[in-house]
Image (tube, rainbow, N blue to C red; front, side):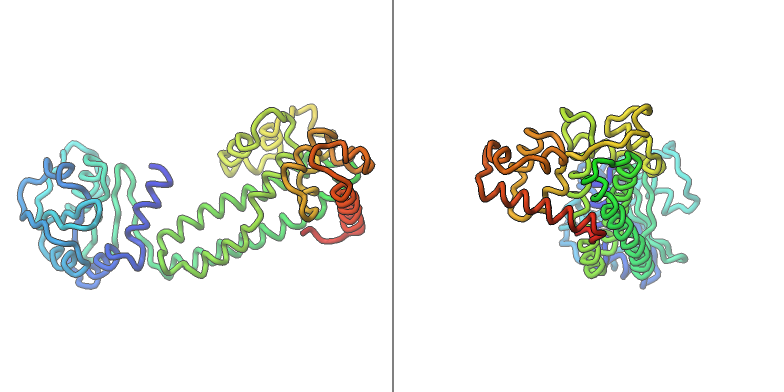
Length: 352
């Protein structure tokens, strides 16, 4: 099951949606229920009996129909209730770990038709979603909010740690002595933040309208993180002919345990084990991006022509003006901008 499929299903059952309102009504009524989200041609072959309704879907009508013993079938657009009191007969040979009849039928049906099937238990008052081989029990919104708040606290700590690592990185870049293990730590922290962001997005999908404020906090904490990762990879990847998006994609695809191993990160950046102890120069993408009104296209040309931050810093204004797009005013801005950055970071200033 893909993350997109997971999110699409949870979006439809999030608090504030008509389907979730219906499911919550069933829980409150204490009747239990079985709801299939599938179009007629998909589900009809496994319906042995039932009432064909073709009536508009509303939370109230779905909740009332769930009072009957068998399944209610709603079309995939959640516009029409197709069947009520439907007797489902999925293939009994389909394996199921469920012991209760309702949940076993739900699981087998979901595996057979590959559409979402929702079971609401009478006694436990829990809502369980089945889709293909996936099983998920919806969580209480308060518990989800608490979980998301804790994750945001961790993300805030990660952001402060990344800030410190970048503050330490800048002087090393100016001094042309960047240890590869420090590069690995910067990448690790940014990747950990991005992984946690994805987990939080999953929680927010399930929270629906309840997660609005927390989403705003997440946006603030993640501002600039992906761009920073891209610039650091541009500065320190060894194989310059390899697209930066490809390198970042490979890094983000690493397992959480692999992300914690510096050698794995550095191998992805193109370094061999023999090179891990040697300091490397920075190309300067990240620091040059801090100079106001210096377009990415000019930064790219600077690095392409001069090769590294050190060479760019050493170049005089006349040498800079030989590069396409750099006239006297821009050359002066580059020189003064780098001088200000050197003074800020070598003097122990803050990363911005």
